[in-house]
Length: 168
Figure (cartoon, rainbow, N blue to C red):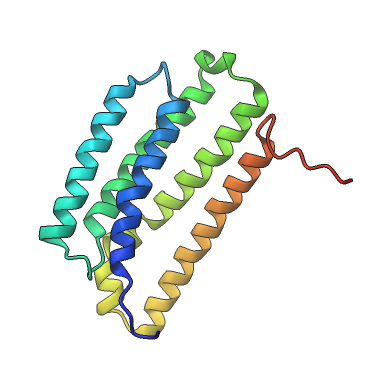
């Protein structure tokens, strides 16, 4: 199926992905940031994303505005989470849980910081760059995605009570 435009899937991914990430941060930062603030930001983001996809950046184009906003919000939440984990108020969190959260948060931070410019210039990269340079850029994106998912894996592995694999 070469030549099929899968950009509508990216629009859907952003629409569904950010609420999942905001739920993660809402649970991690419970008691630090009022959950209604994160819910409000998520609702505004969802409205923005739908309006963007319907009226600004049509679903067959790269939705750079929504991706850039998502990345900026995740970067802010992850920085706040780093500060929270280093603060004495996080002393009640068990060390394995802190480690797990830190790994997952680090993966999100690395990915979104690294891909922010790629997302911003997404349409330009896709339609104006020479094909070889475009592929090279998206290879870097894939690398950052692998780093993020590796951090997720380590974070889940370090999570207390999870992934106790036994050999029988």
